[in-house]
Image 1 (spheres, rainbow, N blue to C red):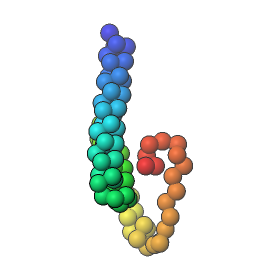
Image 2: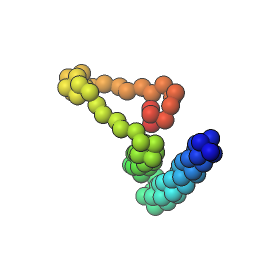
Image 3: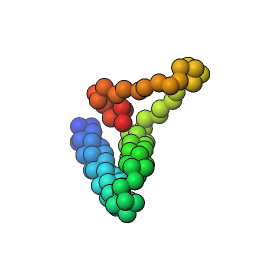
Image 4: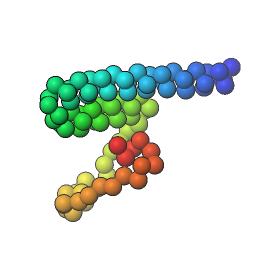
Length: 87
């Protein structure tokens, strides 16, 4: 029974993520088309989609040593594309 619950939770989460991707993509695409190609909609799409996925998965993101970030400006962040976290 435990294996069934785990599989059901996995597939339910996958299905919810697929619906979230579809909804965010549809709204982002329509916004992008109606705005004449304003890339701000891509930014909002990424924030909304990734924030929603993080909440669905129960992730909590916090920044430690915020003063170091401000002390070393300007700076460049580079994602290694190993997970969804770099989005």
